Every structure is written in C-alpha cells, then in structure tokens.
Length: 235
Image (cartoon, rainbow, N blue to C red; front, top):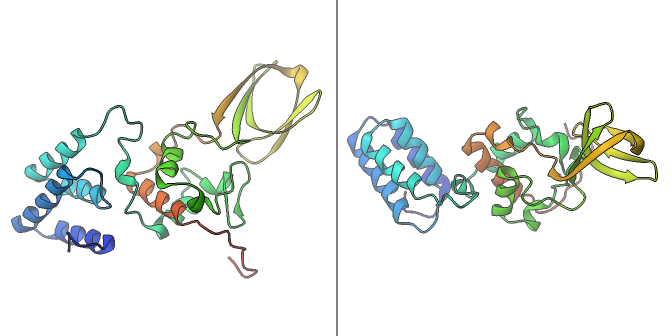
C-alpha cells in the first residue's frame, strides 16, 4: 500500500505502522524513507515519514530522516518546506484558514463571501495559482505581492508609525486600510516618511504554523477553483 497511488491510504498505513511496537514496522518505514532519498522530489508522504521517524525514536529511522534533511538545497528559499506542496488535507486546511487564531487568515482574506478585504480575494486562487506559488505566499509573503495589496508604512510627525494598504490618495491626504480592516485618513502634512513594497501578511507568519498545518493550508487554497455564493442559511 505504501507503494500505491492513494495518498490517503499511504498516510493511514504510515500512522498505523507508527502505532506498532515492532521491528518489522521499523523495517517497512525505513524502506519507505530510503525510497524518498532516491526520489527527485518530495512525495505527498515525505512529511508523514519525517514526522514518524522523529516520533519512533529509532536510530536507523532518525539517520535516514537526517539524510533527507541534508539533501535540502540551502539556496532554495522554499527548501525547508517543499514537503508541504502535496499530501495535505483540504478539510483541515479550511479550519486553519478560518479558525486558527494564530494566523487569522480570514481577517484579511475573503473566500466565498466570508472574510476581510485587506488582502486579495482567494475564492478562485487554486485555479489561478500553483501550489508552489501558494506555498511561497505563506513562507515568503513579500516575495510576490498582488498588485494593489502592498502595505505602506507611514512615519508620522508625532513619531508614530501607521501602516496599511492605500485605498485612495488625494492632494492633501491618504486613505489607508490597516490590518484590522479599518479605514484611516492620514494628512500628508503629518507624514514625515513613507516606505512601500511590503506584504500586509506578517513576515513570520509561517512560524506560527506546524509544517502539517502549512501543508493542509496549501491543499485547501489549491482546492479553491470556483467562487461560490453563501447560502442564506449558512452558519
């Protein structure tokens, strides 16, 4: 089953093997880890195997997992997260998006009429962007910013810093939308300096998530291919 085509079955088998106190289970897991070493890219079960190797506490498994870790390209900005590109759970990823209070994705992004408008509407992002693009937007949010959604920081004459997305610019003031979704008016005479080009997403957002949560979030965003209207009975 570990050599089959069903990711769900492979992941279930890995979890079952992890629960067995058997050297035979270790042998099967070790073989699967070594297959990862010879693969050209991470598979949908790479993360599962790395996690199990850590949980089992068996030296042979830990050594094989260490070899996989050592294969990472230090020059690849996504090198530490490529095992999150596939194998995620869409249902769990939806919970990360809407309910995880550490990252609060829904506060700034809208999906199917639910959420905020500070960031881009993600209702069809899975049709428009690749999994790698989505992973990069989580790991390195300022690497590629959607037009019109870069955050500008304003150093005010009072010494206070205001930041947000510019929604309107008039001759004497800016109207910006901050991370809470509030619209603020900043008079140009009160602004000492401006710095633009950063994403409104926190740079360390990925540190608030486990790799499994990152993988699930990528899977959920990849599943969003068609915008749907909310039901009148939606709760």
